[in-house]
Amino acid sequence: MSDNAAGIPRTRGTLFVVSGPSGSGKNSILALVRQSMPDLVYSISATTRSPRRNEVDGVHYWFISREEFAERLAHDGFLEHAEFCGHLYGTPRAHVEEALASGKDVIMDIETRGAQQVREAMPDAVLIFLMPPSIEELRNRITKRGTESPEVIEERLRKATEEIPLVFRYDYVVLNQNLEEAAAMVRAIILAERSRVAKCDCAAFICSLSGQAKDSGI
Ligand code: 5GP
Image 1: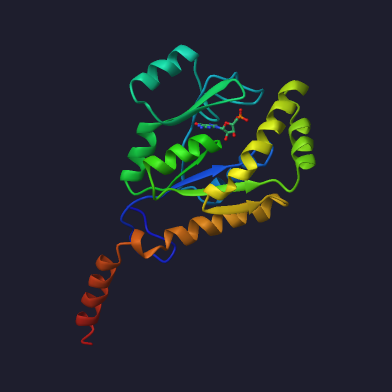
Image 2 (image 1 turned 45 degrees about the vertical axis):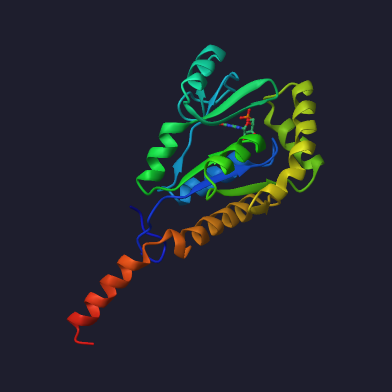
């Protein structure tokens, strides 16, 4: 069972769900957050899309066939799943549930319909939406990535205009104007959530304080 920043034991782990349109900087922000919070467990999604250059199976995604995806879905292997721009994406259930049960915090990067499914399955999950500063900036970032065809870029931008109004279903919104500042905001949210009284074992901590008081004759 992990402690919060103040050293108070916690009763269970928290699930942090991060969504944002393609090009909103999710991957870069999550990389910075994970670097500075190595105790966070990252949920590696399964997808039927092909790997981009530099993407590694088992690191960025589990790259699987549509048949395997269907098979896992039929066996309730996904906590949530969705189709996005012609490809299937899903969160392997066991990894997340085991980490949370052992008191670890889990973070995942999923699109808006999947986030909604997580909200229904785990109402105390914390949903964070990464907001791009403008559609033009989204276009620049996706184009600069150089991994998508012009048609796919247009489809992802169209998708972004559908996803942005869904921010009202989230608990927090973080504007990604500057990468470091946005990562610091996400870290601040995680630290604040770790300090929620309902998620801390304050009773155990008070018992230990009472023991100390008795030992020192107070
Ligand atoms: P990309 O193809 O750019 O890696 O991801 C496309 C979209 O799928 C992104 O919005 C990303 O957050 C989302 N995504 C990645 N993994 C999952 C997942 O396991 N479930 C859902 N619902 N969406 C995912």
